[in-house]
Length: 269
Image (tube, rainbow, N blue to C red; front, side, top):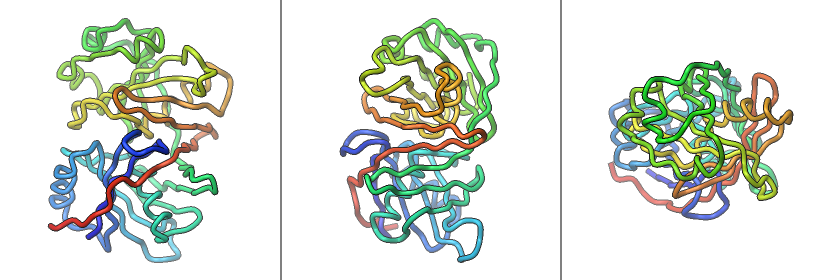
């Protein structure tokens, strides 16, 4: 069967966030899916198969890290939509049935894909014991996120602090349900982005995720409230980076980015 590696939230190969994508006739057993994701060894591998016409979704979609299945993944959804559109398997808007509900992705003439995701609720919480020590930086504020995400959104002092972090990943494992997203306002918005972030998910087998689409369902409302604007651009990453354009629409959020296929081959399993 065909397997593709797609760099998401970037228009250049070897940047953004890579995801594995397999289009199937149906889902094999979970053990096989997890073994493939472990073999691909990227932050997520997406598996999708077509659904009968006339339903609320066109494709079923699941995502696996090297160690576990997750409820929501933005960059692997973008990668899957990119594969569907570039191979002619789908046109226009594609609807996905996933563990977090119905998601959609629409391709534009400029090559971008816009995904429609649920907006995450944010709840201010005290900083967990050991968070500042694990991050190696002072914390400004901490917010918990809604179901299907389970991240802590941690505001830091400035962009330079976010970029220079060298966290203790082992210490971060027990501080949130899924991961820790650190963020700060952009120091130079004229460079084309409004806020920066990095995402750490050692509990899922991913020390750092380069560009986390699902995290932006929480980052966008957080920064939209600060800036008083619904349309923002986020820049995420450490060694690899990418850009996510966000548009807040109440309980839904639009996430827009590019994607590039870098590997297209056969899986012999």
